[in-house]
Image 1 (cartoon, rainbow, N blue to C red):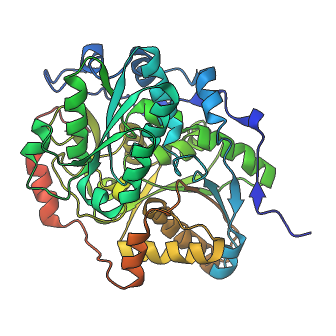
Image 2 (image 1 turned 60 degrees about the vertical axis):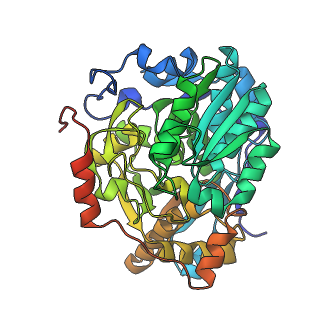
Image 3 (image 1 turned 90 degrees about the horizontal axis):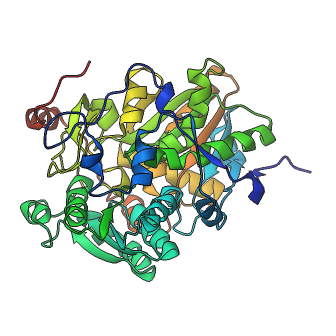
Length: 453
């Protein structure tokens, strides 16, 4: 009998707690700053748009936080997700490396995003909130929140980045099927949108501003964010906890963990449980964060306090940033078109615990097509960046003549991203990159805030 390629867990293996890395980060944590006062943000800066349950998770220093039973019950619709060994890709690359991937595309929305959408909808429903407003880049987060709101009886309003709204119409159809209302961003429905009307392709920063503005102006409406904040990364750690059990089933320990990065939730989800062991001195696993060369936040950004949105409505966060009003080119990896990154992840990159790499569109899609033709799954453009990094790692193992175990997060399928594949296969895909002029402009536009080392 051939060696196994799929490693499955039972329903009883769904994690009972989320992993919180806050207390174990190197150095002193830097607080978010109030956009009104410039002082460390307090509850009054968060309560207008978030329920108390999520605020408590956001600031918690507990190493583990229990998952509510109603959330675990909803997780049971698709969790645990499978882990695969990519044996066909290994053969195609002629590498001694063993390649494993944790596949989140089996969720109802087709990505990892429901892992946080469900607890966010639950906490808001418990707080008596009637509806949620949010942004979405490629549509995975908007789809996930629409699904989660349908599970807990909440309304859902989504501001979808203009380029993705045009490229991925069926993502909008998914959201509307689950009961959400979807607007193309920038829209004429908010002051934030009207002020950015010239940027017709939109950006996540603009869409966040629109959603926050709507939530702040309606007591029955709260805001929900799909990445960046501590509680979002916390919720995603169910991925890495399951992957640890599945790697034990495979009898292997990863030498390197790879994931794509836009805001950081997918990366944190698979990496943080493994990172905890490294920070404790119990493992030497390496970590690689893969991002687009057109929006190279971790590889080219500056480590400064900056707003999480374009209009400056959110708290200022310590992070690698390209400037809060930077509008990235309309690359097909819409979920990675964000000017900053999660403070937790940025702190780890700055401490040298995580390596960041940036990739151009065409090399990324070349690896995605190779993966699809060997492993069968068409990856979303976002995790295609991780696959590109995996190919590099596998080729390096071949050149060195050494065995290497690689684990990566395949955070979603590309079944609604075929316009991107059409462009690549027809030779029409461009390779925009972040320029020095872009960097100089970004530095000039950063808000006044305390310097950070």
